Length: 405
Ligand SMILES: Cc1ncc(COP(=O)(O)O)c(C=O)c1O
Image (cartoon, rainbow, N blue to C red; front, side):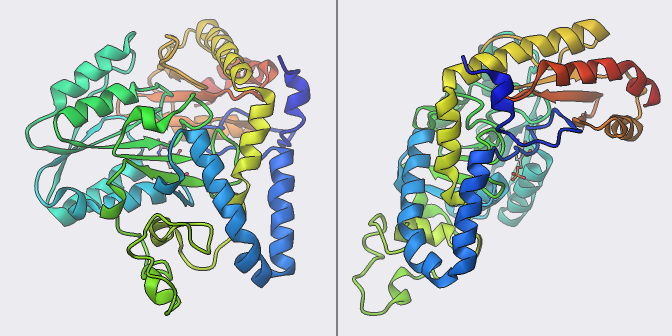
């Protein structure tokens, strides 16, 4: 087992802050920060050399390492700035994917901006959106699959869900949910914003038509790292969110071999015609994408099993010190396999969210208060570098901050 207090020193967090919010934004560990900073130094010193000669092999390597880490094929993976862009690529291609008419089915715990993404796409294509109620405190993943199965209708064209729910950290049985969609001829789209590095993820095994995720949350890659992966055969139905030099691979350099007919062949840019078509958006800082292997190596060296054990230990500690000590009801099942590194609690009725947030930040405690339709939730993120002392700080402050709210 690593010495977790020594490991903590490799994650240069502001020492004056109690950081319990990796779920919103992951910090950048020192080795990853050094890596991305060195790349940015090279970019600043010689931008043309950097973009034209240095980036292509590095981008190709990063695509391969990322695909290997995620359990997928590098030819079916594009980097994006974040999961929002990745879901927008799929939603923006809705007419080519499912035509017009029908419904998009989703859980009642999806991330707000993603709901709006589908809302706009549905409106443009004449689809409707229907949500179904998740049994969020289920003790068996089968209950979640049963709720989804009961919700499908003959009209359902798309099924969208989060692999790990943002409000509570509940882990959904993604493989079984995608299989249920496939059996019904329904397109499955998974929002994996929190899954990479929080869960042992193999996207091929999940079997979604589209799997989108973030690498800048739990993998701790520099901010600006997301991805989209598609099932074999689905990539050709995607439209890029913007038109770039990747749009007409053959017209970019007249006289070069016809690339449109070989969309999966490696090109001169660290991509393939198909991935560049979707991924390239003009001149941009690609250093975060090129630093994903450094982020993978950092946690791999700590040991994935050790990290998962540490997350589980901290989940247990959080349940005891926040939930049991203060009599707060859990909003995340304690069942192994149904939670990862986020644990949420129901707050008592009548608490004012704005005042509570202010009282927490007055004490330099960084933690989200989640607005749900029926109540407020307190969501604790506990990654491997979180300390018991930080959870104690929150616990000790709770009576006072709740009174202030
Ligand atoms: C479930 C879920 N989806 C999407 C997002 C959006 O992530 P990003 O802003 O990195 O695109 C988040 C962010 O917290 C999330 O929790």
